[in-house]
Image 1 (cartoon, rainbow, N blue to C red):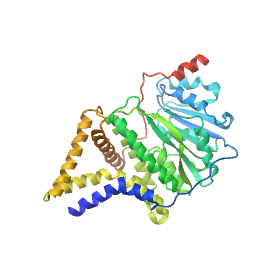
Image 2 (tube, rainbow, N blue to C red):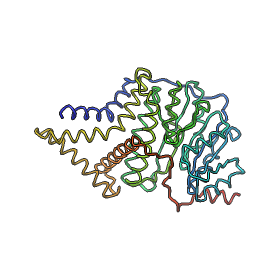
Image 3 (cartoon, rainbow, N blue to C red):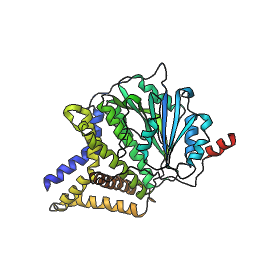
Image 4 (cartoon, rainbow, N blue to C red):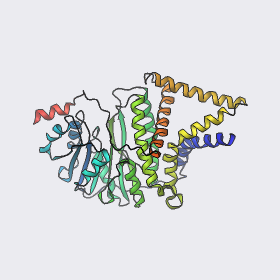
Length: 394
């Protein structure tokens, strides 16, 4: 039990603190500089899957059309995944602006829609972006300029959250995102990045392969890029802002469980990337940043169980009491449904949400549960000003 206790404690400490410190210290490799700046911008195709996005799709299209990327050098393809609201009607209103709509009568899931849209794409670079995120007018140009380096196969933007209905859950999610972005920035600088932000990323068309609908695009595609010997990088200047509508513990839990299940499945399929003898530092980064983090709930359970059986010393009783207090604060935060934003409650609550999601997500994957269809949690009553302005213009 003593061995179990200390092994679990060391692994948990390594994942959350040891790995970031070693990464920063250069233990996983030195930084490298990649060149940016294309002499001629390539033709790109922007891929936007949409399911019941009437509240945000007009603002998304207006945002894309406002980009300073040459309009004659890009296509915009929007795939309606069995939408039952006004999504398709709104998109058709932009046909005169060259926005293409592909309607899929039955809902198939995000990855399936991406497969269908890419089969119709003509761009040398594919840009994947969500219907509910927006970015600055220069973002596409910044993103694409990274492909001046022939070693780069995928470029991801930096995700950011807007929290119009902020709760303790969303506030702490923003803190967690800053920690996660820092890790990705350090990995990118060392050629170790193997994941993307699903809200905005771009990849070379010749590296594309159809997605398995049981996997997430933001992890499966970077893994494929790495297998083919190309790098994925994070462009910190390309910021994609998403409205974080999962402002309660239950909706945040469901979102994270689904994402982890799909990404865990992708890592199992591409498990060759976990071999440090073949992929060296990249494999160690995947172990540290992804696989061990998803397994943290199992180590937490083993740690608490071992500690419960080792209450003979004052130190062990103190550590056990701290764990009980931590989980009690998390239960308090769950009971109050995010109403308390104080860090002493919000941090334990969010920590338990993400690890409960990791536990259920990995178990769902092992048990073969599919998460092929995705239903975004969006406000249905909100109407965007972009719809009104475009309606007036047309």
